Amino acid sequence: MNILVSGAGIAGLASALELGKRGHDVTVVEYARRLRFTGTPIDIRGDAIETADRMGLLAKIQKQRVRMSELTQFVDSEGEPVARIPMAEISDSDDDIELLREDLVRILADALPDTAAIRFRDSIEALTDGGVDVGGVDVGGGGGVDVRFASGRTGRYDLVVGADGQHSAVRRLVFGPEEDYLRHLGVYFALADHPGEAQSEGANSIYNVPGRMAGIFRYQGKAVAVFQFRSERIDYDHHDLDAQKKILMDAFAGYRSWRILELLDAARTDPGFYFTSACQIHLPSWHRGRVVLVGDAGYSPAFLSGRGTSLALTGARFLAEELERCGNDHTAAFARYEARQRPYVTFAQDRVYSGRDRMLPTTWAAIAARNKALQAPGAGAP
Image (cartoon, rainbow, N blue to C red; front, side, top):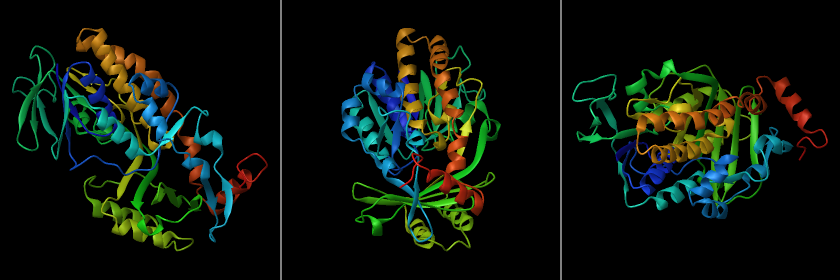
């Protein structure tokens, strides 16, 4: 089949890989100019490890394994360590694999078959059935989905895979406004390159003020400034970098302790600054007509779960397998894909709140209590 994938993140690349390997002609469209390599290390957990193995990627992934989280500590205002994050909150088992996001993106991109191609600086603008807009999706009889792109191009595809992340344009076109399905968890996350700290050594450090955390993570000769803060939902343009930076600056306004000002300066000057919210997507179904969602677009568990990457990999694999097993009967395949993936999504989405409360205590007293609890023998003391 001729399949269009929206988004060249982990879910999109994994979908293109799995579908392309099975002989489908796959076109991936990506809004950005290039693949995004920024991001803190990610985790592959549970059955997603077997999925990576069946995708033929596990050996390459294991070669890139890092253990950054094991060297992460909470510090006080003087930079002195006060506690470590308990290993039980970092991983489910010793088999879990932690690696840099950029390494997994490169592994997936390098593995794409000749039947899959990426087109950058383009995105889906409209989905229609037979030239008539029907909620953005072919509801039957047309035999395909007509797509108009932001670039002005048009095309007709047998299937469209929305793998374009938490703020999915495909989901909005097909299922309706984001606010109908988004559950904000009250936390925002930001990441910025900190080149001045790149050659420094030492543990990764996290410092808390009420409802906020700032930190420095180091890996493979790089360093990043990391931020989280609690907040009600904020409306902003997801493509406006300056607006996102201002949100971060406002969230930490008035806080000058530890290295907060230094880290904010790194964020202010980084052209690759990354900003997102901890949100979950809850949909009664991830498919409609010939359109199906994979990864955060359909079932974001929020970064607080540590399972978004695993869901992207299992989702891509299950979708491709079911299309093959159902002889390209997309209606049956989509239903079977959803039945297999749903239990993993439910598990991941149910596990976010304890981690949020551990990382972002809301008062100075709660920060002190957290640190004291982690200083108990066997509970994460440095």
